[in-house]
Length: 280
Image (cartoon, rainbow, N blue to C red; front, side, top):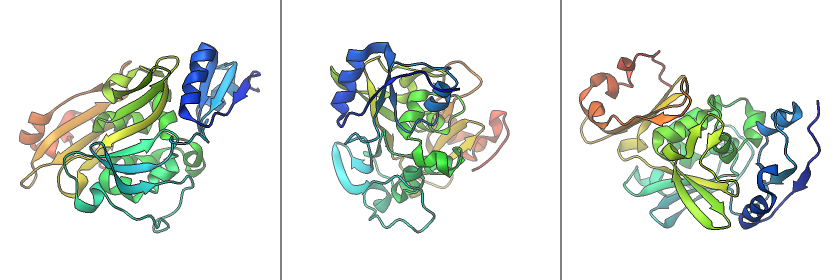
């Protein structure tokens, strides 16, 4: 089958996207990599009168290390996926000095999964995100698929929503009324459903850099992702935030800070949580 006829729009600025969404209403849909949307349209499971392509919109691409409101020198841009050792970008920011309070990693909504998977900054500062990325489809999909598209699509089987929940990420959304920040725990309202208004576009996502030696560690188990942040002293944890993203209609984050400090099973990755133990 082929997609139904639609009008194509290619804005150059994020503000234009918000204006188009406000003007065109429910008949418009944002498209980035199109790895989920295009197959649905081809099967006519989804029909839209207008497609708004954000691939060439300035300000929606890149990976940056930030300290509060200040942007560090760490900035990475790119779309193609490469093998180990093929990235020559200089690394500064949270990964250079070890994780520290106030640091975060911002990723533009149009940044491809391949760029995230090949980022040294992400690997050092947000290791769970780096470990989850190769599990997404295959390299052709990761070369086009974007983090913004994955989060906005809110697919229950997707890796990035589970990781974002586990790490307590924050989503940025832009509308004609201005920009707002939405905690990911409040962003997902169900499968294929988010808190984005009809005239809002997702512009970026910020991942906090968890404190502790080596930037923290992460685990993923059957779409169940969690972040365990080592604290002072061997084997002790300061925060434990598992995010369950499947087997229920609305995603949730469960906070278990106390248990992470006292329960050896929680500190070892959650063998006592009643699911198959799979450390990745």
